[in-house]
Image (cartoon, rainbow, N blue to C red):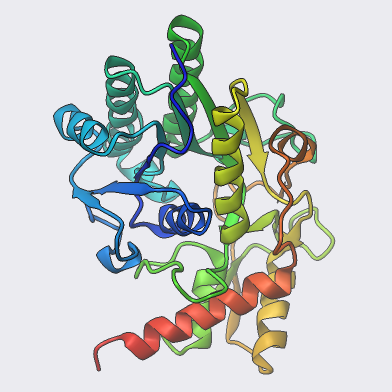
Length: 336
């Protein structure tokens, strides 16, 4: 499949969501033209900057996608649209396979049909399941333990097979724990139902929830709580721009971890939140949740080498400060 000329518009699916909206901002900051497809089921129209076209609908609608690509002269697709809540995927596996796998297959098929030759996929560290070796490199066994991880891994397999058969070139980025918000306050995590630790802590800090629960303090970690590799969402967004540059320069398909290679425990994160706030938070220890690995930390050598990517916000304090600032902004803008 022939490569298209660089600087063509980028189609961002799910561009009204948390990560997608930050990638739209990063692309715009880099002077790249962008068009968004989003059904607004979880995304916010307000997250899309002025001047960015929004096509409202599903990525599983091939006619809608084909029209958007043709109307805007799209050369690359960045795919974020999907469902992301692990416990929900266990309760509603059919929805997750439909939304994450079937719709992705439809999107990839549409790209092939109208000869879009570059694809960047939002994947996840959940494809690794319960890894035995830390840090986790990209060659670690992929044994996801829930439908969310499996639905993402199936899409990775599809991309790999399509690339071999048809010449589509792709970058699949496996995210570790994404957190924080745009330092300029333009976007952040806006979901009302918080499932991520820092979002929950920010809601507790702003009086929107009565307490924070720590699920298990008896893990084989330095302080007994789970350890995760947190990556600032704006650094993650810049990794997508670097992936775009890589593909536009003729780079080969890659599957890469996105993290910092440094883990923080639940208690360390909450301690930093309290330090930034200058006060304590209501924290309660509860029992372990099923399926929580003690430690998940990325090995990140490859992304730096492959994409020439250097993070700018790789410290926990910055992640916490931006998350809290965004939560306060949301609260100030909420109808009284």
